[in-house]
Image (cartoon, rainbow, N blue to C red; front, side, top):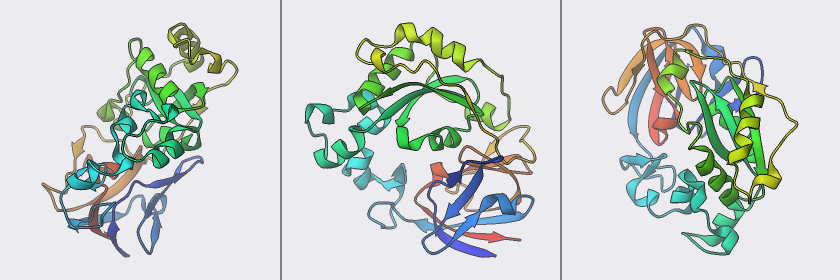
Length: 264
């Protein structure tokens, strides 16, 4: 089987295990069905996810020009505490920013390699947890806009990490945690503006990933350095493909790369 197209983050479907789909312009592939098969990945060109031009990808699947221009790459995406739509204040495109920022957001705890705090739109639960490779997660607060979620995350970062150790996540060096207990302990540090939105009566969500074999020592595949790679797919976790030779390939980190994919 042969496929060709620009890489975008894999779409997912909750299940036991989670189902992963690689979606191209005119076709899609259920990646769970090709576990234990040989995959050949060949870099063909760049294709910016915004302008579609063959330009080097700068960040988030965009060329440098688009990254610093389009509203969907504003700094508030990565730093939600910088959101200003609730003040009717524009960053790059107020209409777009209101659409994204002025909707319910969740501050959550996820355990992938360690306990971390994060922010996502409510509509992105549990997709966000899956993308981070979290085997368990829980919501802490549900607020009406991105700004309140952002200042809550900033406050909690003094007491719990906001980063995932992706190498530990992929080698499955995990430790079970009582996330309900963590949620309750962190309540004391939630800003007063967000405290009325604290969630007191939920339980952990547990996630199962389709992995036949975890890597012993992670080797990251970069299409810039290795434009052609072939290996046997042994698992999928987060947005990573895991191969038998300990190579891992970050699909989301390679958005905007146009590839050929052959499955034997």
